Image (cartoon, rainbow, N blue to C red):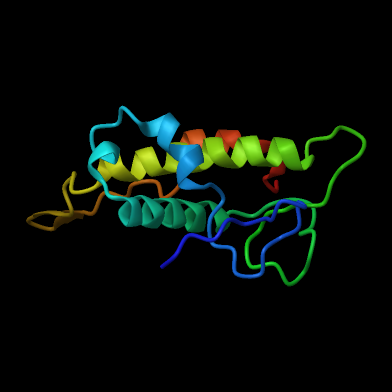
Length: 143
């Protein structure tokens, strides 16, 4: 699947958008991550798209700029405090995607899937969205 950035140069939502960051934005942030540097470009794009999809499932306050946009962002601008300014949304989204990609890479292939002993069973559950990504998007989260 091709990476399609969520907005255009005029800050309008892109109809087929599926990513909150581009490879050129994420590469400098993860350039020293041991797993990231060995991915080829299509695999990096897939990692960014997957992280964007994970971030997109959270509930956000405010409204979408366009009801037909495929992703949760862009959010309506809030003139009072500026937390929904597009520039700030961009910075926070890139930060969140970077953290989520790093989290996904770090947990890939690691961990116990299930534990069974007698009448006890345990299936550990990892967070889907890392805390760093949640913190980056806190001003927009509902509740």
